[in-house]
Image 1 (cartoon, rainbow, N blue to C red):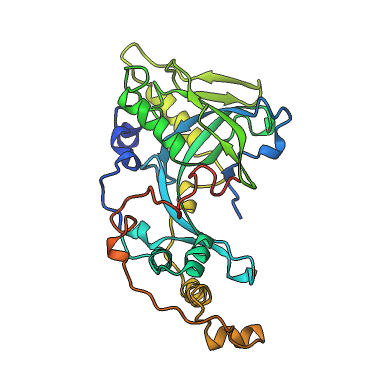
Image 2 (spheres, rainbow, N blue to C red):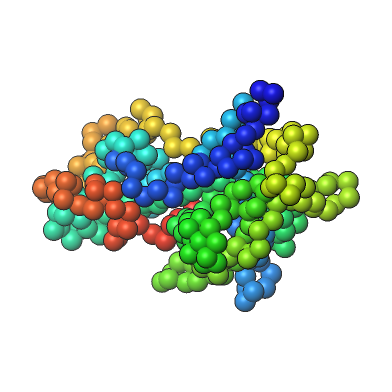
Length: 330
């Protein structure tokens, strides 16, 4: 039947090609709906945050199986004054296009001007990943048990998923998104302090060693029941339909968090940010602020963007990249 054919990728080995976010070689040139790790909710600071989730495949509303994880690169402009110049911008590098904020950062870093180099620290970069998770346990937010949320994570957890896929840890490769033989993930976060900043550290988080079929929550009885799998490793068609309905029983869709192209308004704001940080404040911005142009001298510097690692696709950038797990969760 056509209905069951559409579910074939979901149950019969079609998830392995939905892991493009693990492929580092491919070309790159309000948080409603997110499962939040809020350290303020932790009662025992020594123990830290603890919850258990199950990564879920990305079944779209039209019944198609899409990439399990959405990857997004963003910039956070952290200008204290004027505060209205601060904000988060999705990088055009998500679309293999030149990024003006990346260019600005390296122009300032390569200027050999101490003032510009210091100001460049206000331009921060992050790469984040988004995936559906089923909340199995949450000591801090028990009301979320049994619900499907969208989990935002960084490189630390991405690497743990990759290690399971390759079998690096257990010796047995496992696609943790698999509905019949996936793994539960224990999120452990403890606060660490760097200078004046405090961040959650996820290095102790781990996948449970055993593989199991997907647990589905029975709201009436308040318990999870693993889906039955036949001796042939397959799920009966009538159960597949129930699982499909379960996966679609969510309030938000993963695609809501996909990268978006810069709007004209954002482009204009980035122009103002560039002019402000380099001492070339525009007349329009000065008038809008009701003040004269600052007396800071204009700075001339060479464009060495083509020689920097960001342009070559290297994400481990000194100075611009913070701990990827901490960018939005601090």
